[in-house]
Image 1 (cartoon, rainbow, N blue to C red):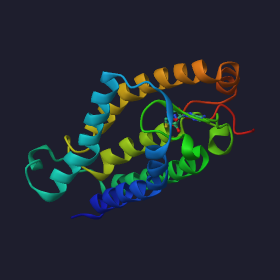
Image 2 (tube, rainbow, N blue to C red):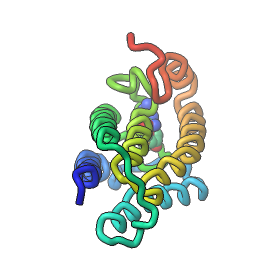
Image 3 (cartoon, rainbow, N blue to C red):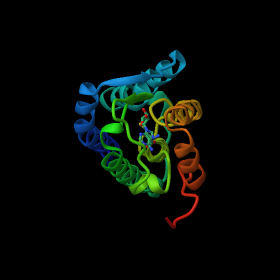
Image 4 (cartoon, rainbow, N blue to C red):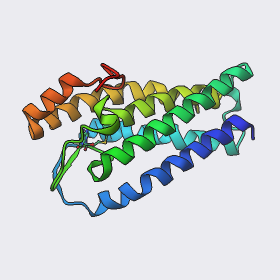
Length: 194
Ligand code: SAH
């Protein structure tokens, strides 16, 4: 297996470890609101397939070899750099969001609006991290099916998710969220000052 594929699997393992404590808290948390549409659920399952199942098939078998492409080595290393960025942002977002994290769109008992740490700059650091991930995947997994399809699926997911999430946050936190939205960027900071 080449080094870039190993980096991909190491990154996936790192994300599972980083998320594990919040995943445990999330399971036990009392949910007061859930907004999970069927479209979103379908897209999430497909994203899991292109992030995990297809790379696994690609790594363990030669079934997908017909769809391989080859990039110059420096692009593989660019993938490593993007992936490192994805993990840093991912870790920081988990540290700051704490038990307010959910895999879908949910409000918990005692939910607080986090506006500090990385959330003081951008509202969607976890999705920013996923953008970096899907870009890195194109360079690390050089196969049309196991690589770039993640980016293609993430685009509609991102658009839908952010629209629904921000609606839910406005319904829950009202003016406080509107002001927070005014002051911050989505996945790229509006200003580097705070
Ligand atoms: N969009 C954020 C959070 C993703 S997790 C990011 O990309 O980092 C999704 C859950 O986070 C939703 O259920 C929502 O209730 C919660 N959430 C999103 N932004 C939040 C914030 N600023 N403070 C508290 N909870 C938030």
